Structure formats: structure tokens, C-alpha cells
Amino acid sequence: MDPRKAKRLAHRIRQAARRHGLPRAVCVSPLRRARDVGRWLRRWGWQVQVEPLLAEVNFGLWDGRSWADIAPAEVAAWADDLLHHRPGGGEAVADVALRVRAFAAQGGSAPRLLVGHGGWINTLLHVPPGCTAIAAANWPPAPPHGALRRWPASATVAVATSSR
Image 1 (cartoon, rainbow, N blue to C red):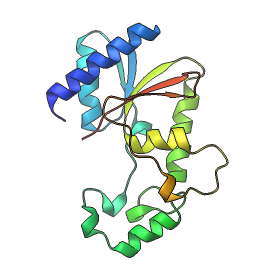
Image 2: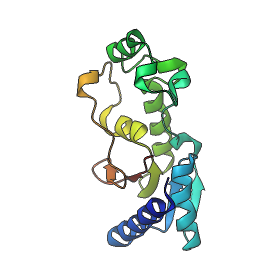
Image 3: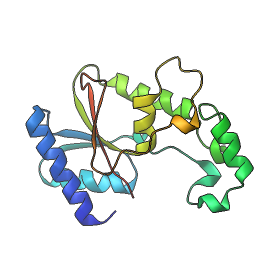
Image 4: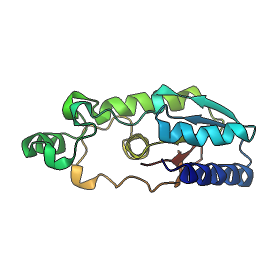
């Protein structure tokens, strides 16, 4: 991530924390683009925890490949069973849902700020417990860089996203 984007996002997180009375603490994904935001916050006196459960969705052999390099039949199989199919041998959306819900449950009811990625954020926001299927056509686009999302609506977890 461009260092200026990381610093701008860190500033937005500080502003959101002040505005909503949140503690000066943040959990970040282990991916560099999220850790870079955490580094800025740490410089400004924040507590920063790198949390492996906040990593982006693992796309297995698909990671780093363009869509054009993935067989259309593989993409179709994933779209036909978005919840359970493991793209490229990676994680199914159902697995991601379990992972992020496990993390969210660790915090109890205290509001937290997280810096993470669109895949697990969408999973947390749009895959309710007990979900048995997801239509790929209904899957929302990733939240834009710097967007603040609340989960649940009572803001138990506030999420700031980072993107490439």
C-alpha cells in the first residue's frame, strides 16, 4: 500500500475513535497493507494487535492470479456454491464466517476497531449464522478503502478496511 494511503487511513481511524469514544486500540490483519496502518497508529501511542484471524480470504492456488488465468469452469464451480466451495483449494466462505465470528466473539460487547479486508468484512456483514447458501450474484462488492463498517448494527465491532 502507498505509505500515504496507510497514513490517511490511520488518521481516519483516529478521528472515528475520537468521534465515537472508542479506545485507542486497534486489531490489524497480518497482511502488510493493514499492518502499515497499525504502524502509524502505534507511532501515535495506540495499542496495536496483529490478529491472524483477520487475514484476507485464502484463495489457495488462485491467490495472485488474474481471473483470465483461472479456468472458467473453476470460477463457475465456485459461483455455484459460494458458501462451501474452496476456490483454488483455499477457504470457503463458510470457513471464513467461522473464523471471523470466532474473533468477533472474543471481544465481548466492547467496541473495537479493526483494520482488515473486504472478503472477511463482507462475510461478517452478509453471512448470518445458520446460512445454508449464498447466491454469487447477490454478493456485494468489497467495501471501499477506508470505509467504516459496524457489526452488528450496535457497533460491537467497528471495521475499517484497507485495500491494495
